[in-house]
Length: 134
Image 1 (cartoon, one colour):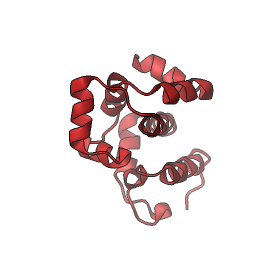
Image 2 (cartoon, helix red, strand yellow):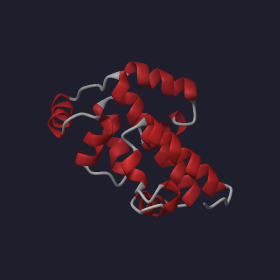
Image 3 (cartoon, one colour):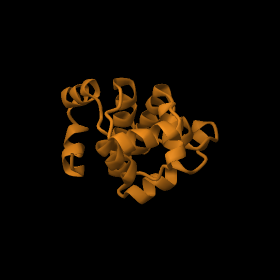
Image 4 (cartoon, one colour):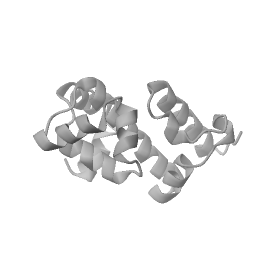
């Protein structure tokens, strides 16, 4: 799937459900991973799988189980939204790696290992989008 097709899919909840159920192919995961600033180690932490397992997915060109696929797509959606709000991926990536007072002084990227963390980041992006800074 191309980046353009992925970006369209990220705006279509029904398509996201289909992709999650079908499972994200390693090639799509790689596309998502390459658009963000996260290391393989960080991705393994976010997905709660070992780096070795990620390497095996790559070697065998496997499809991720729905639980991992959903997390990959949630992070991809967050990255797209962040890029749209900050204007450039670099600005969003810098924000993700900064300690944010409104988030208790933690780096936003440290919250990506939980759906609740991703929800919290989306809420913070909404506040930023509307000019509400805490």
